[in-house]
Image 1 (cartoon, rainbow, N blue to C red):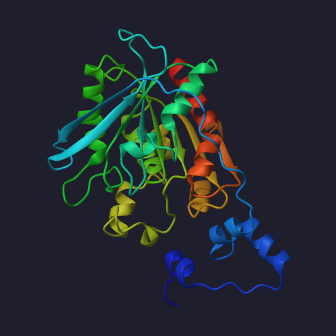
Image 2 (image 1 turned 60 degrees about the vertical axis):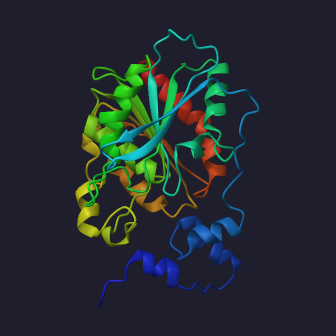
Length: 301
């Protein structure tokens, strides 16, 4: 029997049910084709989070020409917590955006990362800076074209941040945070750098696939490339790193994220979890306060 990929099922599969009760049961169990669409239409994704009505801290912005990205002009920004002294050397969390976005999207009204950081600090959370940077759509790993936005983060962005008076030098430990494509990228970079360089990593709705044939063609030329750079089966690379994974049960990546978390030994105590939500900024805003608190505690440990 020929293999039918999950992508083909989700795009072309129909759903026949005996009634609304059967639909609801299938949605909750995550077995129906088109489950994310159905869960959203049935109102099962929960409430959207709201950007805090607080003034953000100072934001430093700039650009650099990234050799790792093939000479591309690359924008970046650093969000500082309100009240931080200019001479103060703060720890850093590097936040990675999703596919089709850039660094500025994380600070825009859809997510409001800068305002959530200000609210985190105002509530007594550990103060730290958050750095965001353009990574294109290359999924934060080496591509056949030679572009490697992951290497850009490690070899170009972090030295630049250290030059800004932040704790991002070769002996400093950072935090990593990412959404969707960036969630995958955060897990991959945390595994590459290890516990010596990464205190904690948060992956939000990480773009993961259990079937390599289903992986996004914009980030992986074929199944072999996905398998080469996959984080599934490599959870041991994160030993000693505090890990949090959050994914909505109405997210297309929910089952793969669940399988990824199940691949850790019980002693790893992966934080986060799975609750109603879609692959949306509303869900991401809802869980962001707990994620920022998690990263603050890991950096303060």
